[in-house]
Length: 69
Image (cartoon, rainbow, N blue to C red; front, side):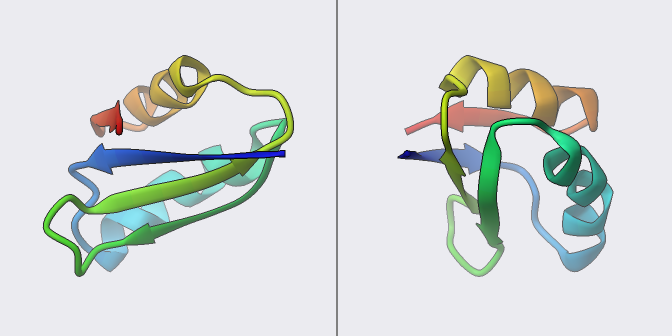
């Protein structure tokens, strides 16, 4: 298992609600969270085998941006 951190533009509870179904359904994501209080809007993902690029593509499909840190 590995943990990957991303800087995002997911900045409110409604934004989190929009990405939730995509991240919950993505095979390989064991858990995730977004700290909307941090200046970087930090997304933390625990994954068994996905790459940072896989997760960025998933986030982009939701209309948001993510950049691996």
